[in-house]
Each structure stands twice: as structure tokens, then as C-alpha cells.
Image (cartoon, rainbow, N blue to C red; front, side, top):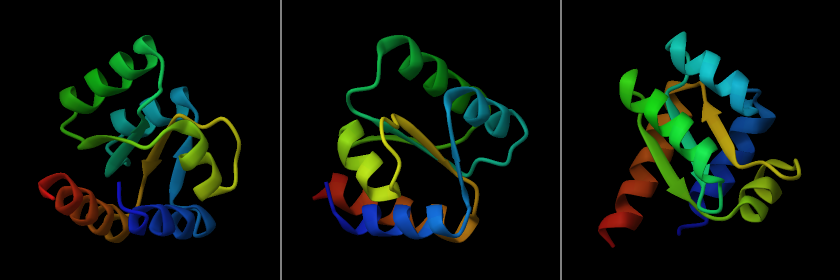
Length: 104
């Protein structure tokens, strides 16, 4: 994975354009506030299924990225497995970076 998206994740967090916590993320997906959802690759099966199903139903893009420690360190909070980005600018740039890293 590219470290560029982690830098943007940290910026988005400091700009207060992120939602943390499974229930808060679900609410923001349902309210169409979440522009993109990032899931840690070591997220539990139930949490991953719940969030990915919500994202698919509400047409919110989601990506499975690095492990929870890497994501948590990027945003300065411990034990985070999912993050929703609420800002179009941050979301579009993170999508662009992740799509490029997937294509290789």
C-alpha cells in the first residue's frame, strides 16, 4: 500500500473530516455523508460484512487497506479498524491514490 493515502488520512483527521466507530460510520453511510470508507485488512468478519454491505447498498466506495495498527497510527488513535471520510476533496484524492496502487 502507498503511504501517501496515510498522510491524507492524518490530514483529514486533523481537519475533522473523518468518522470513527462502527455505529457512527453506519449512520453517516445511511445519511449519505460518508464519501469513502476504509477498512483495515484485519477487521473482524462481522464488522467487515456489516460495513461493506451498508456501503454497497448506499453506493459508498470502500477499500480494504493496511492493518489496524497502521491506520490507527496515521490518525493518532489506537485500535481503529474503520474510518469514513466525509469530505469530497479528501475522499477523491484517497480514491485516486488507492486505485493507482491497486493497478500497480
